[in-house]
Image (cartoon, rainbow, N blue to C red; front, side):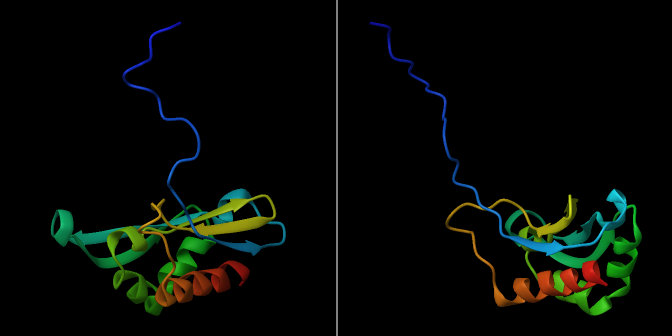
Length: 125
């Protein structure tokens, strides 16, 4: 019988989750609906906080999101982890999501739902 490995590799499902807001879109160029937040922060480690949020991306969506000052104010009020938002086209849908979280951190607050909903409105518009 083979000796047992003292450092076994972890295989199988990982304890990581993401909540996706999925928006169905009509045809568009792939880069038009690609965007992500760019955060200006202050502090370090546990005291790190978001001062402001802006959007980066090759298409018109990033420009429209940057023009929505209320949205960017709402994002700046979130934690650094929640304020990191990605908007990615995948075929005929666009996915709006944040970073991966474990089962203890995972959840959508009413404020994050409102932020995702507002971004979805810009994607549809």
